Image (tube, rainbow, N blue to C red):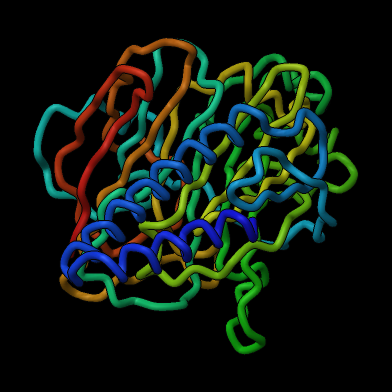
Length: 345
């Protein structure tokens, strides 16, 4: 790392001695571009080489590996499910203007099972909102999952999983901010009588709608103001027989938390992915941007093909919201298929 920095410092000194200030600025811009490209490649490498074990990990650019770090306690946050029904989900074919949240959001649907998803904000402008209560969420399908039901004592059930960055693990700004990443897993019994008879497993919390939920361990990450979200990436992955992992990267630092894939077997049903910036749970359900904010959302999904996913409207799965209005949704295939859409106020 020290050698890497020295190279840039030496280059800057040489340039400053032989070229004009304008040319030096151009060289600096090229160096910055090269560093950004290198950092993007580094993030991709870390994603493909995520630890295949439970635990918490970190990495610093340009190191090409993960190291184990101490995990934090599971947060007590609850990122509530949407209150709308699945009948509202539609393929997006119009340019309606929509406020984001409580199901009213775009989601990418893959043709095959989704292995991983990466959420980012490639363009952010006009945003001055600073450090507030907010979350970034990658949300999967909330759907029938026979593979998971029997171990919970249910003949039929639905499962749902959320990969979360929270700006504050306890939602209490008065004692400062404690930013973390974690995975929140849900199971819903279709039968009330079975739910009442079996209850929730040890360590799980009961929730309305015949639901049980559990949060994974967490790892502390950098605190990012809302105005700085252009620099972050949130990744969620699910591997059958392995682990589910949430990863977060910003400014050359990366962090991850992994739990057993058998927690809710989301790898058996995951085909729909929602990603956005939302409120931070029950106390702060909405994150509010200043007027004049413009944010582009990118959701890259991996189902093992180069096919473009379908963009679904009214397909969001979480209840938390933001005060931005969405534009139309675009889809793309290729090496990194996904969807993209603008939102502003």
